[in-house]
Length: 265
Image (cartoon, rainbow, N blue to C red):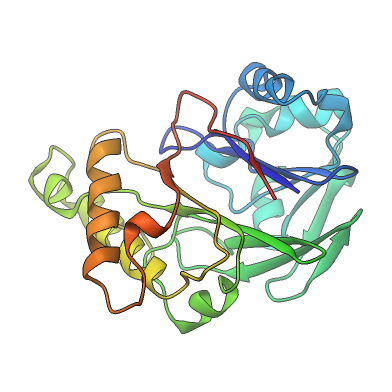
């Protein structure tokens, strides 16, 4: 099983998760050209992609969907409400809406040899989900665009081998920055985005001996930077109420502009 971030940030997101036989993208919020380049870097032609898992309908998660779907006739998985928004999105152009495959939170489904486990998240979208993907004894997850976390989210992120977790903003940078008040309230609210501190606090609830890789993702371009996210999350882990320290784990920040390392499980 492999996992790699092709791009992750407030301007666009696309994550690859796959096995030897099944190849999935979680979101397609960057250009088709960049997606193709990322796939080429891991030796995978676009025609080998099995399907696209969509977390929600915001443009930084879907802007490349139309081109990809038209070119490769790829099935697109998401909640019914999300798919309805995608079908109505004129900026994606025309594509075969018969490829839209509705899924439900907390109802597992199979794509090839991968088991996909969507679960609910709180974000200002119609019916957003995060995804846990399993292949045999291995499990990874992509969990971004969450205003907060609770025990339900924690339960779905147990015993992972790798995770890409949102670490969107530094609260002080956001509060003192140039964003209008309503936008600050949206980001900081329960249906907004996970701060660096809360990313670290969530990690404190899911760390275990076999967690091989933590990617911090979906960083805000205006209200965060990689070094700050990295150090804040590490501090939360070191000061948190768990038996681990940050140095016990491989932690890195997924870039909006560059591929991450490839995690092989």
